[in-house]
Image (cartoon, rainbow over all chains, first blue to last red; front, side, top):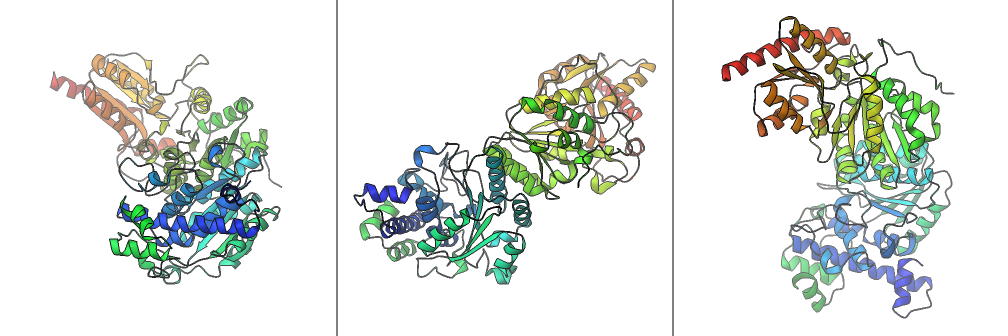
Length: 301
Length: 325
């Protein structure tokens, strides 16, 4: 049973219909966003914009698609997830904490001395992280190696890599894109968090990326284009990826940078690394549906 | 259809280190069921064509894309494979950061084997001659760095590298290599070896320079100087115990490498010597310059890394030792 369904069942809801599972994923995404704000506030630095934009994708992937469970993080047959846009790790730590891969309070120690929750994910520190990332483009290449190695060993596990849009400006990404198509790695699924912004400005003003779908199509990938905040759409695209035999899939997920926090949405200023004031952090959590007592708990306790 | 037969190796007189590596890898492959060899369209030059022919199912063509190849090796190791990344030394430094993050920092058991190091590349010229690779890979935490001296040692080192648990960078070589060791040679990662006894000075080499150190010892003997020669095939971790002993017993050292004098064997030796038994050290290597075209021996002469230069350096080292006494 996938994690979201498992949690829904634990909370007494045994009907397990799509709406219940979707509600569970929505709750995971909500917590992921709150965790992102709280951990970055406590760290006094970090990247909120691109963490908030991928929260729905992560919540869906871990909750409804991947075959990976907290009690089986070293199972050989588990699906692998690589956060190639490693700076979005506050969201990864949040979603992992929600689904039980790590402790929620511990994961709030983001970026602190001696914390395993480094400013970019480290496989040395966290057993459920599949590889260390933070240098854009590399995680994707590592994911390709995993997909290749799993196929060579006739292991049917899948490999998912989440990429940022600015990351596609790294030349090595296109080495990986070519290599994956050449080797017909249909067990590899890239998900593009396409929020249209990068560190300093819009992609279009830094180094334009369009036409996005045409690029991937031309390189021989199966392309799925979706609203990256629409959970049923994410679920459907990830499932379609499984049936594209002989081709790797890219899910181009159109997202909004800073999604869920009104003053951040669509503003590259919140890419990071930023330091929140108390007022900003409290306003962000209020936007994300946290109650005053939850805000107190997340930020100050 | 691709031709998997061995190419004619231009400019090679004997069995080169790259060919010795490629043959050894093919031969021992059955002992390593998870072995996978990655290539960036230079298998004909790295000796890996031997492996491709013998074990096509364990050979992965990555195309001319070294960064992806290096990162992919990290991923292959992550799912239990034993990846060996192969390429020309200069192009593998292009994937340096991938080796750092996705292999070494991720704690992966992946191997990097580089052919075409230093002036040994010959006529391809400066752009293809890596003088920086030993220094660069030595600086990555936890990376073992090896440069075997002859085909016999290369074969032993290939097995040792696959048996070793952890990331390794190993240099092979392009030119026809001089045979130094007999079939009874023993290779151990982290251990240097005295290959010629002597008491006046220690000549320490790696790779193709070990043969030149032996030649230099002959030249010195003609002048009544008794030089010890050490094969230091492992540059990291360096054999500090042997170095201390040589410094104590001979009182001065010459290092010889087909690499920049900064950051490679000479630096590794000096770092250990100043912390152990300080003594005069002279460096033979490329003196912070770029290369050029020419045959390996011509270039070695032009850049001052042949036996006569080693012998001259030895005399300088001995002179300095006497001045200190």
